[in-house]
Image (cartoon, rainbow, N blue to C red):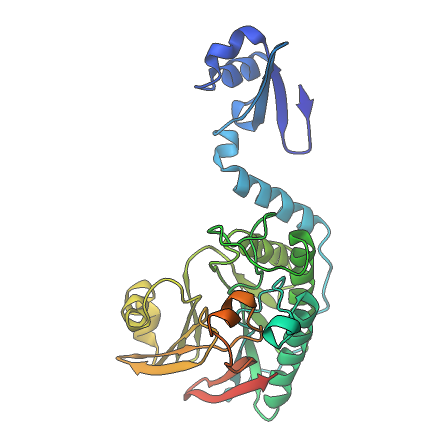
Length: 346
């Protein structure tokens, strides 16, 4: 038997091989050792001819991915830094800044030799920081009393060690997956620290198709980092559409690879019906397509955002190129809806 911080593994006797498939061996042997079967992560069966490893599906009543997430998040919380509290002035004439670095694809590789433009993890980080600062500079003159920072949306280019998306589509990558995860974590922290100097921050996470798993893990780690900071709030569950209320504004966000744009208003009216009834101005910000669209539907305006990332080999070869590269932000008045769009072009 081996014990770790949150797990226990055990070695089963060879004559218990017949019980492996239904996990009775784990249950019986753990109970005989005075252990709760739900705390036993896995077991293995060894004979002179074979070695069989298997996992306990009842471990903590959670899947391995969720258990791993909990372990990582708790570890980060144990070492989360303390943030000084910024003094804020309340204003009836305040404004919300929605800032949305969309489809940054940290880890994407584009070679100037082939596509005419260079893009890699370092360029992605430079553009995120430059773009956020550029939007902040353009927001001066408005009394910003709240910031809605939109995260996720293919912040990472791949979702595994094979260099592919969650669905398994191979990608051209500039660095290893673990390097890109650490880079993305740090750039999110750098951005939130910058935004905190202006106003309290609400972080909204949108799950996305390139990094459905790793993007979620990243959002959980960032939330844990700010667990001791009361001026940053988080909405980082796996719901595909998120909603945020500011004054008379109801703001929805989604990645954009799922529900159709003309259905988003109806979905908002059902999924956020109490907020819908209390709001006068309603917006949905979408991503995924890397170019600008904007249209008024009944009761809601749906707008897709530009991306700061360049076209890689496949997109350039197929003609998906030439769109404006940018990071965008939006100013919402408490009483008058969206009053300004802010764009930092590259």
